[in-house]
Image (cartoon, rainbow, N blue to C red; front, side):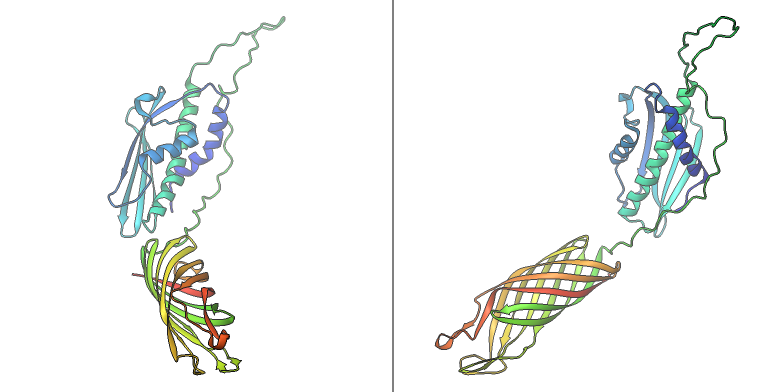
Length: 354
C-alpha cells in the first residue's frame, strides 16, 4: 500500500476538526459522489460505500436533493486495474467551483474481492470522512456567530463578553507527524480452483467389539467453497480373537466418494463408501471376504499450517453400513459390522492452485 503525504496530514487534523465541531450547532453538508468500478472487479457498491460513510458521519452526506445542507463539492472514487495483479483506487475532491482540492491513490495486490473491500472501506471511507469533517469545521468557523449580550463593568472601557470557543481556530503548530506505517499484509487467499491432496490416519470402530487403525489417501478438486474427491481407505488386521471354532481376524479395504462444503476452517462432507472385509485367518464359519457398503457424514477442521497451501486436519467420521455383515455360528457372535461406524482422523491436506 502507498498513500500521499496529504492523506497523512488530514488524518492527523481529523481529531482537531472533530473537537472543534463536537459541541457546535448542527450543520449538514451536501456532497456529490462519482463512484466508478472497472468491469470484472467485485467491490463495495455505491450504496454500501454511502452506508459506511453515513455510519462514520452519523448522516448521509450523499443523499442528493434529500439533504438540506451546505454544498461542499464532488468526490471522485475510481477503482481500476493498473496492471496485471495490481488494483488501483484513485480518490479526488473538487470544491463547488470545480477546483481540485486533492488527488490521491492506493494500490493493492492481488486484485481480489477482499483486497478491494479492504482498500475502499479502510482508506476511501476514512479519507471521505476526514475531508467532510474538515469541511464542516471550515463552514462553522466562517459562519456568523450570535452576538452575546455584553456587560460593561464599572471602571472599564471595554465590554467583557464570553466568546465561543469555536470562533478561534487553533494557532499553535501541530506536533511532528510520525512516519506513516504501511498496513499489515493481508493473509494469502486460497485459489478459486485448486487440486486437493490429503493423507489421514484413523483410530476407528468399524466392527463391534474390535478397535481398528486405518489410513486413507484422497485426491479431489475444490471450486470456491465446494469440493469433490475420491478416497482410498485401508484397515489392516490388528491381531485376532480365539473362539472354540478357531481364530478370527479381519481387515477392510474401501473406496469413498466425498462431496464437501468449505467455510473458513470448517469442512463438512457427505460420504459414500464401498469395499470389502477380508478374513485372513479363514475358518469354516467365515467367507474369505464379504461386500461392505456405507453412507455417512464427515466433519473436520482444517487449520492452516502454511497457508494457503498446507493444512492440519482433525476430523470425525460417522457411517451407517448398508446390509451389515454378521456371523454368529452356534449362537456365538464372532464378527459383526458396527452400525454406525465411527472414526477420528488426524492428517494433512495440501491445495495446489489450478
